[in-house]
Image (cartoon, rainbow, N blue to C red; front, side):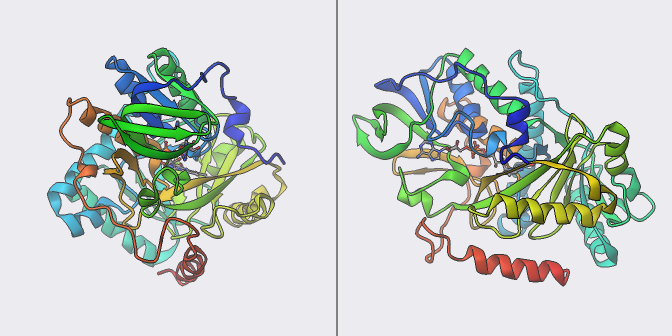
Length: 424
Ligand SMILES: Cc1cc2nc3c(=O)[nH]c(=O)nc-3n(C[C@H](O)[C@H](O)[C@H](O)COP(=O)(O)OP(=O)(O)OC[C@H]3O[C@@H](n4cnc5c(N)ncnc54)[C@H](O)[C@@H]3O)c2cc1C
């Protein structure tokens, strides 16, 4: 078993993306994931000088290694936003999340990108009467507000989406799509370079200070002055270059295993239409077919970012076999992990801190939203779009978190596991 992302093994990062750090730029973007590159592409195509830097490799954060599941909505659910901020804010966030799916499809039309999009829908999976009633309520709410064509799946219809006997209720959302994350991210990087932006890897932003109407950012490769700075560091946000930002974003780990290719017939016996799926729990699993008919299952036993990959693989395999006991003989070929950025309200945010802009906080719902928020932030900075709805609500930290050592993740994991077990 390789301890390496299947996606990047399948589609390696192209050579020739990275350059030297210039002294000056119009826009400096810290983080070369989907957020940073989406913003960078729009700004560079508008004719501005754009430099993107990354502490690691280009798109080496969550963007190239995730589950590749894209659908409207946000981690908190716009029903929660509706309860706190009212119908107008909820409707705007919903509309933006719907546009995110279209934006990925549009990007996929570009010459440098072929993300192997699969339009097979997304399904939440569950078991039993209590979950069925909750699914009924959710579907009724979203149908009434946003005229979605979601369906509740019961014991009669569930097998259109998932094989086996474990899951017997669900929600099917037809607009959900699957992408190959490495193809999407590295393809986008190619487009960013084609648009004239400069990308520098292994270049960590370590500090920022005001300088002549802009900011000077120090890095391990020297310093750079920029008119505007965008922090697009999401789950990899640390106290450098902004302690204040680190207080707002809790890094959480997520882990994935991939099986050997199963062949079309066997893969279809698990996911007949190739829908992207997830279990509706706090410590959830997400599962899908890959374009080469492997199965991929992700999740975590604990929210920490430093879990042992071998143990995570064993945990995830156990879930796989619990859901589909027939897969006992299947070989696991890859295990890997990555970091999500979780804001305390589970709502993505665009904001301004220490003189820089930021866009982040997607939870496990960030493939579409990162591209969308990067695009929206660039539109705001260019003066082409009104302020994004994600920049219009308060973004607060908690007094007990200073941006280092999120001690509360382990007790929260224990609580979540217990609540999941009793079905609350
Ligand atoms: C295992 C896993 C599975 C997931 N599955 C899904 C899914 O199926 N569907 C979905 O919608 N979402 C999913 N997500 C979430 C989604 O991948 C992320 O929300 C999204 O990729 C975030 O993109 P980003 O560009 O904001 O951040 P990232 O892609 O994480 O990029 C942040 C970058 O910032 C860089 N950085 C940090 N600090 C500095 C610094 N000081 N200087 C320079 N660079 C810095 C990092 O090196 C990193 O490359 C998953 C995430 C993980 C980890």
